[in-house]
Amino acid sequence: MKIFLCKNLLIISLLQMGLYAKEKSMEELSKEMANPLAQIWNLSFQNNYTTIKGDVTLPNGVHISGKNHINTTLFQPVLPIPLKNGMTAFARPVITYIDAPTGVGIHVDSPVHATAVGKNREAKLGDLILPMGVGIVRTKGWSYGGGVTFIFPTSQHKTVASHQYQAGPTALALYANDQWTVGAHLQHWWGISDDGTKNVKMANHTDIQYFIMYNLPHAWQLRASPHITYNWNGKDDNKLTLPVAFGVGKMIKIGPMPVQLMVEYQKNIIAPDTLAADSTIMMQANFIIKNPFGNL
Image (cartoon, rainbow, N blue to C red; front, side, top):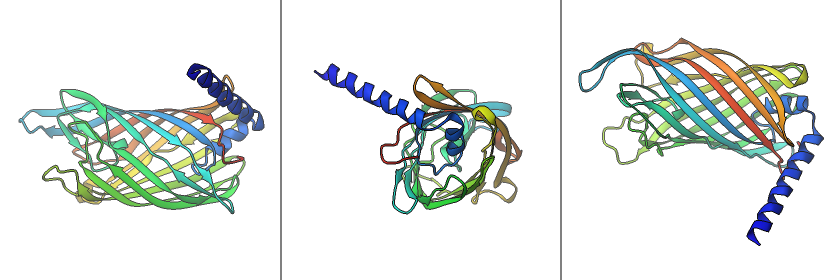
């Protein structure tokens, strides 16, 4: 009986996905997916391969220079709920899994941008990010929204863990037409409580993801979506990380399910002197599913 019910639920889900794919072309879906406030449900998987440059001395006296790397995997279910008058409610949890060195780490930014060097490595769950709020979404013209964002100290990694609960505001604004989508998503966090770990300095940092996307025929897309970070607790010349980026995206179908594939190269042109990310190769796949509450 249980197997029969599971099979029927799977068939219904696939039929919903198939019907959704017929409602909109790949080009339409690609344009709407460029809007972070779009009422499209999707399951996002992202992998960031980040090279780390630094010249530091570990607590045991070992000196490390040259390049290390961090591999960060993100899972983000995006399940917005439409409200009245063109508004939408969103909650976008980001579950992180980080493969990083265990020598020296700096975790003043969000878990997505953890920095570490060392001879040994470990791969563990990272901290959880949760922005949530409401916004007004339009397929063309201005969309904007705001709310609150949290970081929870769920990391099991020895080095790249914040060990503190963080909270602050989030805001998003963008402009879209047939070809372009341009905007930014701001998040700021203050440390509000530690997890019992001693000598934890309370965080005070900002993350601004800017995005520039240009739609091409056949559901192709040129894109850039890196994160600018600013550590308000850092020294004057070690607060800002400023990247530039270039990438491509393509909407395809896997069976009845639309899937958006993306790859992007990001290079930091301004970064802290001692220990910082140098460049990142970002790969992402968004699996689009039917939003049972919306018509977009």
